[in-house]
Every structure is written in C-alpha cells, then in structure tokens.
Length: 254
Ligand SMILES: Nc1ncnc2c1ncn2[C@@H]1O[C@H](COP(=O)(O)OP(=O)(O)O)[C@@H](O)[C@H]1O
Ligand SMILES: [Mg+2]
Image (cartoon, rainbow, N blue to C red; front, side, top):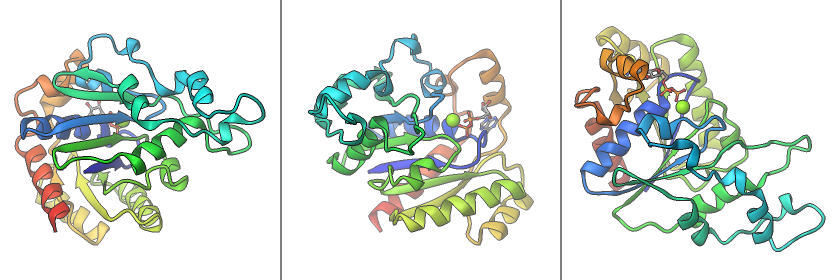
C-alpha cells in the first residue's frame, strides 16, 4: 500500500506520518518512508542519529543524469533511471524501518519535470509491493506534487486538517486536486482537535468526517522542544495512530 500525506504547512503532517509509520511497524509491516519535502524533516522527527549523512536523491543529479542515458542536451527532461537499484542505494535503515530523502526539488524556470520528481513518480507507479509492505510519503505544504502528477501512483491520500477555516479551505482544495489526478482513496485526518465541537466543526466544513482525530498533545510539543523523536515516546497521541492505521487498512480492503 502506498500512502501520501498533504495539508497546510505546520498542521502536523510529518508528526502524524512518523506516528503512523511506528504503528505500521508495530503491526509487523515493512515500512518505507519517503520524505519528499524540499526542507526534509522526517529524519529528525524519527530520531535518525546523523540525518545529514543520508544521501538525498536530489544530491545525486549526476547519477540521475547517467541513468538517463543522455549526456548532452537536456538530460533533466528525459531521465529514465533504473528504479529498483536506486531504491536500495538510497534507503537508510532506521529503527526497523527504511527512510528515503528526496531533497530539494528544483522547479526550474521552464517548469520542467526535474529528475527528483521524475524518480519519485517512477518509484510510486512502478514499485510493486507485497501485501506486507507499506510506503509512506511525507510531502510539503504545497500541492506541487499533485499538480505535476508526481504522486499518481498513490493508493491513499491523507489530508491533515486542523479546526480552522483556512485549514479546511486548503484541505478541500487538495481534495479537489487529488480527485482530478484520480487518487483512489482520499481521507481527512483531524489534528489539534480538543473536543466534540472541533470534530463537528471539521465534519461540517469538510462535508465528511475525518477518519481519525489527533489531540493537541503536550507531550508532542515538549518532545519537539527537547528534540526527542516522537516515536520514542510512549503513546504521545493515545490510540489515534492505531485508529488511523485501522481505518486505512479497512478502506484498502473495501
Ligand atoms: N497533535 C499534536 N500535538 C502537539 N503538537 C503537535 C501535534 N502535531 C504536530 N505538532 C507540532 O506542530 C509542529 C508542526 O508539526 P509538523 O508535523 O512538522 O507539521 P507539518 O509537517 O505539517 O509542517 C511541530 O512542532 C510538531 O511537534
Ligand atoms: Mg512536514
């Protein structure tokens, strides 16, 4: 299963993805996390010891160009890398999971499809997964990946939304784009939800109920200030990650 996450900046995408990754791992799945944020932050959130040592795909432009089989002209446009060995080369083992960092995606002044997003698209569309494998794609706030069709191979898009008008507006925009690129399953996930009123506000504004709600967690906030990875805390979000995983699994089987 390939799951991506989107939503307005700072709503908790990376945090929720890290918690969800931990939950899938606990349930016995093989987890691969792809950090496709141009300011990657997943390694820190997971507590990778030397995040700067991870080789980002974006730093490997030379290699990508070689793989494209073209040395002159505009190699950026015609990249055709062997996805499988790229996968192995760029996977970082961490705490029983695998992490891959895409790095900065240069849009370029001609609006070209750059090698990084090309590689990502190939990975997502060509990657054949067994029942036991889960790919989690963390993305930045923008909807560039959706617009470029980079995440066309995704099975399920999670849109994180907090109880505010502007967050709902962004979430609905993302939903529309995701429907346009025909992502099979699209769900909302509520974050920083304190009470029933917040849940109702979200449900009314979105026109559907989020599949899971995460509370505003003092533990998560404190951990962030201490730079303690969320996944090392003892259930900082209660049973929300489990509920989210179960809802995703159920919808995937439906
Ligand atoms: N449920 C939560 N409770 C408390 N703090 C949270 C929660 N979710 C996220 N945060 C905090 O909010 C900030 C932004 O979260 P992050 O996951 O980086 O957002 P995004 O990836 O959407 O930009 C971080 O400091 C994170 O620790
Ligand atoms: Mg993030």
